[in-house]
Image 1: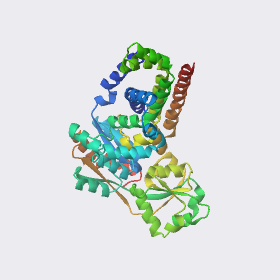
Image 2: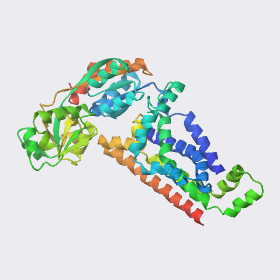
Image 3: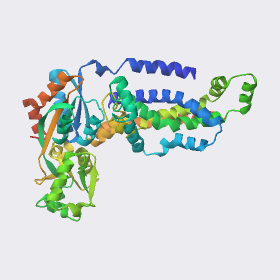
Length: 249
Length: 219
């Protein structure tokens, strides 16, 4: 027992006083909506190289990140997949203002090339071979909400009710479709830029409204100058180029 | 391989195990040797985290530690910060989540001690406190170690509670189990496979150790 203590306690102390090396560098903490993961990783790397500020990202659905922020999560910047949550945060005094950093589109993606041979996505879904369709949770994922609007506009709500599989984020919806756990899934157009995305096929879903994605910087950000710098970078030409590559406008 | 997540995981498991073992030892002692009305109710309450879904524990911890919760408010007036989404927050969550795994094996180990030893201690004038420290603890080291290893493993494997209470903040609350989940979600399968694979030998070896320690108790 004493020996265990002799080993454990110095080890604990060591871990406490010597934080992981990354802490030495300047850094910002960014909460990112799941649809933007791929584009964000490239944008963050580019930003890190140009400014020498480390970007630490947390990915989840917009709704759950919003909830985390409401509960005091210490993010410096929030990249949402809608305008609604950043606007709410402004009303609640978390941020001074919001910017629009990307516009996205909803697609219906399938790993099965046969699926895309119908005239429209509506016809494709009417095929009796289609047993399961993934959709992101409309309550927490803006892409899920937009997908749901499209389903309702097309009048398919009732017929699809029992076939829908609810994913936590739009990224998870694509993961379900890509692993063929489901026959097709409502995804973000950005999914098509990934290697897995190119292996399948998709329909554009015109009925779904464009996803206007807004970002905001925390009023009390620990590293406000760098956080503001990052927000400004999101709007610059370099970031726009990367964004376009991933299917955003 | 997300080494930062690995570091957070090990740090979390070590801290949670160390703190919980110290806190749980007196509770296990109490459960092993005292008799009182309603003991089975208290015991069931202590083991409750084992039977509850992690989401239930997570929900109550958010209610308690959040900005509107009692603990969260006290913490905020004391430190000005939030308890959720911090390392301290997930450490508290891990400790609560693992209570049964510390208390149960220690209680069993304490009960296996020859009662004549305790009688002798009491006849020789040792106080209860001294008997606990100098007779019970040294005679149940294997059981205590087994409990510690179980708590350590349980903390390493925790997922749902930590995701709810801590989110996934790199270097702070993103542990390996969450890193694996995110790697799978973003279809980064090679990273997920590497991290997942690293779990198996570690968990296996530690479980072997628990078995060896328990055999020691029985012998």
